[in-house]
Image (cartoon, rainbow, N blue to C red; front, top):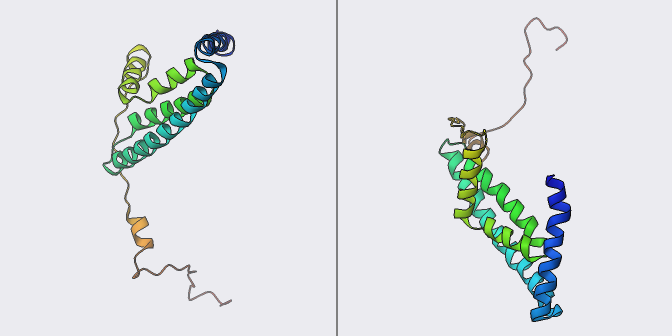
Length: 153
């Protein structure tokens, strides 16, 4: 049933909206508007995606699992796909997914109406390995242990 909605109902809605809008403002203006929403939406998705990435890194540095940021990332990917799809219905849904409060509401609805649970965990990791690579006092080397009873050496 969801595939019928995705591949039949939504394109029919898009065609109807596209025909109605082009009847009122003209075909070229409608095409320009569809192109403009894709460009504006793409730049907004990029900006919010970078913000979500930084927020995810901050959560991980604090030892928290970034579940909200991961969900926001999936919403932003969906928003990007919907915004580059020509049509006003998909653009509306895509722009709604760009609003942080709408993503929070969607997350709340999904958690409360499904069997998903918010998992809390403590992540312990250290950034020392990346710091050591930049430390000039550290010399990296490979070695092989030679035992005294080893006659081949």
